[in-house]
Image (cartoon, rainbow, N blue to C red; front, side, top):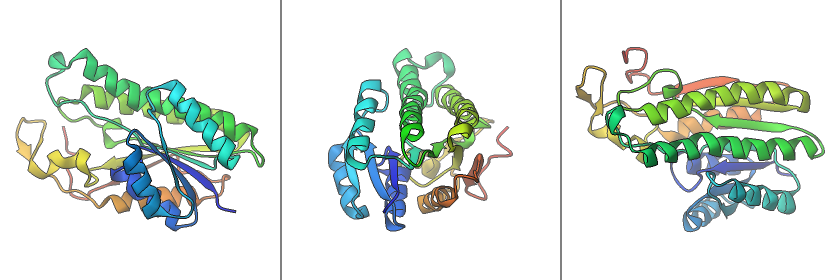
Length: 246
């Protein structure tokens, strides 16, 4: 029987590639996101019984409905990839609107929490008990870019949630880890192709990586037995400015 995976933000970018990669390697994947048409397209491409379910991760009732459908359809969940995320405009801190701040917090922090909470409840109650949760962090969870306070703050929060959930999940065979990504070549990284702002105020075109590299890392983490975990892994373009950001 196929193991069941849930990928949020699965309609495009890293989520899309990861969902397809998991499906091609034997997983039955539930694809969650706001664009049902995109989800259906990816589910068809992925195959292996993949199913697209519309969900707004920033809405706790929408998340509850998603997990109720997973439980009724499959009876269990073996993997959650908390991938959905948004960014705010790269403007000086004092110019960030409350609406932009709240949008990032609602999706990147609250959305991860809502999904993790529902996954814990299902994974603790199913037989056999347990499962794996992988959170999409960022190298911004370690080192910020200029003018990125909402996104950077949100990814630091994800790291705290990863650490706490990893501890709380031990007794229930729930392994929790985080993948920190640097410049995957998706729409979110479009700025890297035209010039990203550096700490000295200059702009520089930065190297990117194929998002398949990220999907392969998630597949590796997902393939481990629940007795083994990768708490944190960083996948980034070798020559991007990370260690030397500041």
